[in-house]
Image 1 (cartoon, rainbow, N blue to C red):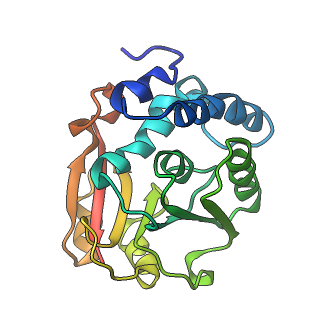
Image 2 (cartoon, rainbow, N blue to C red):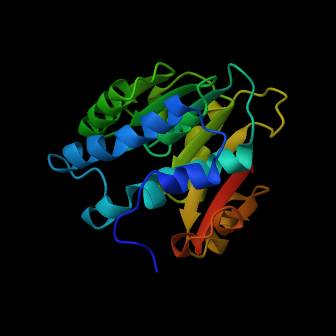
Length: 213
């Protein structure tokens, strides 16, 4: 059974290669999200004691999937909300550039403040939707924003085509039975259970979905 209150130790357990600066940035997230959540419902109140497992570590499943990324790799976080998965990934990948976008202005303000408070310099923010973003990226990441086929349509024109170890595309975090969503895309889809990387019960029904674009 999961503890009622997790700590940053769960991150360092799975990512022992983190630098002291990265660990310090992850440590700061707890107080920052706790403070913001008292003002704006950024994450579920039920999750406030499990920030590191259910939000930070969950976001970093994408890092386990993508592995090492070259300097200058660009990533859009579509529907970032309060900064997931983008902020944990931006801490992990300081050599990459992140553009975080959401339709809800107050959530972008939260994510922008948290990024500033953790010293991130590799992130930009946009209040809007993917149709208002005219940039292209190596990857688009997302977490439970919309059905998969709609997500593919929303972001496909934002993908640039470069030769990377994992070809450009959409990498998103989903849960539950996704058969209908995957079929609706009409595309090749790769499913990877998050439980392949992390042992906590929370991840038993979670999937990484990769759609090359």
